[in-house]
Amino acid sequence: MRRNRTVRRSLWRWRRNPLRRREDVLEGWILLVVWLLVAVAAPVAGILGAQASAHSSAQRRADRHPVTAVLLSDASRDSLAGGTTGGRVDAAVRWTAPDGTRHSGKATVDENMKAGSQVTVWTDRQDRLTPAPPSATQAGVDAAFMGAASTFAVVTAAAAGYYGSKLVLDRRRRAAWEDEWREIGSQWGRAAS
Picture 1 (cartoon, rainbow, N blue to C red):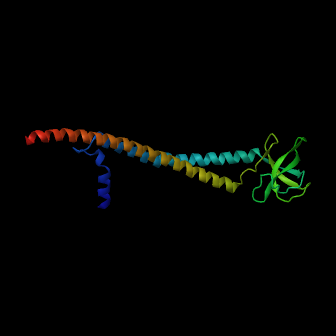
Picture 2: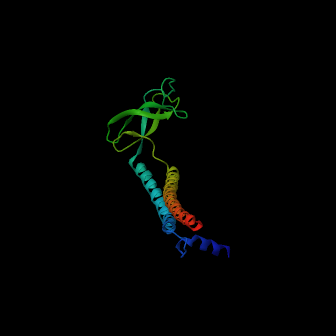
């Protein structure tokens, strides 16, 4: 019984009613569109966002490959230089590409490693140093986060659109009520005299 009243109350905008205004009907249609967006577009956006993130991670894993490099100097923390993150420091390394060319650059390695130590670095197709690609677990977490963020963005945009339109419609309703009260107020003064 209670559910029936709730459905009737939510559908009042479409019923015939002498107090119903155009703005009420328009608000009802906007609300319906918002619910459809939330029900249909939000899950689709979430799936597409997750797939795009997973595809990007897979592309990074395919484009990067590990290479064994040699540390050119001791990897110690220099108090004047930055570049330290959690026991890791930037250090100069040298590696040989699959085509035999020698390359050098700065890579993040474990602190306190000695010169001549072998480290694994990641390079792209042009043999430039790059960060390690995300692991499968990390890629899954990133995809889930991106899917949730995409869904949340669609829901937020739909809700913001509804409340923005509701503000405009409420202003129009208030203006119409003021006009009607002025009109009725002028009639009351004539009836009293």
